[in-house]
Structure formats: structure tokens, C-alpha cells
Image 1 (cartoon, helix red, strand yellow):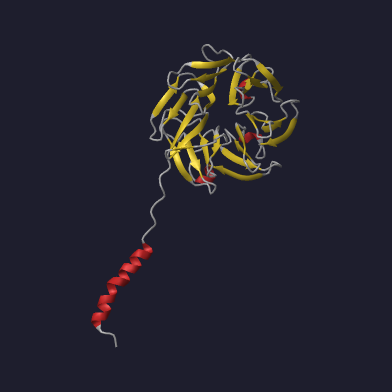
Image 2 (cartoon, helix red, strand yellow; image 1 turned 30 degrees about the vertical axis):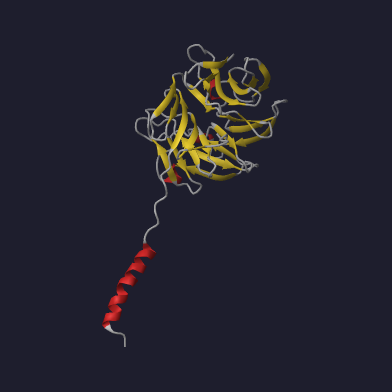
Length: 315
């Protein structure tokens, strides 16, 4: 029969073993991002990971990129010196404009840097078109865009060139994302966004072709993000109902990160409300930004936890 002294000596070891087994795992590291933010009220800003505004260009911008050179490429809303909107490349330190293009119609909504010093530009107006321009401001190619012409501002946003060379354009009031042949202007594919009825105002603002061939679409006033396959079938979506919070408020810009998470804007958010937030594939919110007084039309995540986002073009 075991003695009482033996059991007493065994008890601390049992307690220690149980404590080790049930010690909770350390919490995952907090996510921080720096980003380029773009909008009418906020203009063009670079926000550091600690939330401070470390750079600002005081003209309203709808689209933009921090280039590998460190310069900032911007699509400007109609403003002083650019009555039809425009494109500028700005030297980051001096804020000197080293390249500019002035729109020839009503508005320039988007810009994307291409190879060999060329740029893809969306020009809105009576004849909406996708332009390829060079650093002299010369138009090298013009492709007509097939969308409504009654509301120029709502013709198209975030026009992008795809890896296959085609263009993808979200046409807001047409409730459609269209893929174009840039040479013929022919529409090759159309992804409708009015599956819930047009009263939901699922106006497509951002359209991102993902590496698996799916397309991620930001549906602005409809306050949701959808991902569709090559046939236009919705395979993933997220909205306020999914995350259990009212963070979606005009979901304009979106960006798919390399880890599979999606960062989303809430353009109509103001004051101390959330302007940008990140959700996982499981629809869990893992990061949010509430700084500045106004929301952003679009953005570019630059760093995450101090590390640059490399080859980050999925925006």
C-alpha cells in the first residue's frame, strides 16, 4: 500500500504537468499595415504602420501607386491645372511633378504603369476610352469602352491590364465588369453584378483578376465584395452580415493580399469610423484603420508588419 508521503511528493508533479498541458497558446501577432490612400477629401496620402500620415500630395486623387522607384503615380480628379482630370508622377521627397498628362474629356479615373515607360489610363466623357500613353503624353493606343454615357463620373473605375494583355473594366451603372480585347475593342467576357436586383446598387468599382482565374469585385453602394469564377458564378462573398459589424459603407476599393486576405475601403465612413479593414477567407476582421476624417476611394498596401508587399499588383 502506497504511503501518504509518496502521494504527497507526487502531487506537485501532477499539478505542474496539468498546468503545462492547459497553458493557452500565445496570441497571434498584431497586424499593422502602411498604405497609400486616395480620395477627394483626403487627397493622396501615405500612412505609416503606426497610423501617422508621413506624406501628402494636396490634389484629389482616385487611383495611384507607389512605384518601385519610390515615386508616386496618381490619377487626379478634375482640379486646378487639370480641368479634365489628369495623371502625374510625383517625386516623393520633393513632391515635384516629373510627368503629367491632362485629360481631354471630363475625367481621368484610373492609371496603371506598364512596361517601357507607358501608362494605361481610363478617360471618361462622351467617348469613354482606355488609353495607352507614353512619357511624352502621346497617345499610343485608344480603345473605346462600351458603357453608358449619361453619367460620365460613373462610367468606369479601376481599369487594369490583365496578364494576358486584355483589359478589365468595372462599369458601375451598367452593373457589369467587362473584359476587352485592347486591339479590337471587342468585349470578350461580361460579369454581371445585379444578381440581387439593381435596387441593391451593386455598382462594380474594383475588378481584380486573381491568380486562379477568379475575379474579385468591389460592389460600392451594395456594401459587399464578391469573387466570381470564369463563368461569373459567385464562389465567395463578404458583407456586413457576414462579419457581424457595420464596417461596409460604400465598398469601393479592394486588394487581395498574398496571404489570401482581402483589404476593403469604406468610402462613406467619416469621423472615427473604420475607413479600411482586412478580412480573412473565413470572414474574420483582423485589421482596421480609423484615422483621418474621410474615407478612401482606393489604396495600396505598402508594408505589413514592417515588410514590403512585393509584386503587389492585385488592386
